[in-house]
Length: 158
Image (tube, rainbow, N blue to C red; front, top):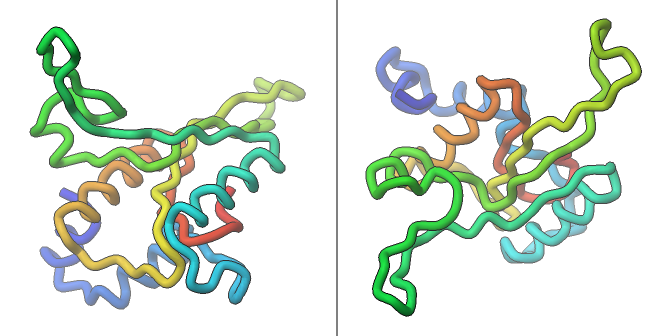
């Protein structure tokens, strides 16, 4: 069960869910005006540059399936082990690692935290369609395991 299904089960208004997402960074803030009217590809490039500036790295995560030259069916991308898995979890557009310095037992050590960004055009809002619900499930899974993930509509996400 994803966040939207849970909210519907308990009669929580979508406005409250949107506020909760904002509070926990599930939809990133962006610098107003800077990327206004830009397409998802521009946002994606901008988010990747920001990650690099902060010492992280994000790679494009293409997901799909095709036949190779020998006729073998090949699935590629994260969460694409089967059609069923891919329908339930849609991995984010950008996958990477960011440096994090953590507490006592690792004082002075830097660890790499898994991070994922599902890039969207500037001005995008969650529409509660199956694809976006599957993307949100992946984001929620990453967060639940200690990773860092969100929908990204511009810079200010890493």
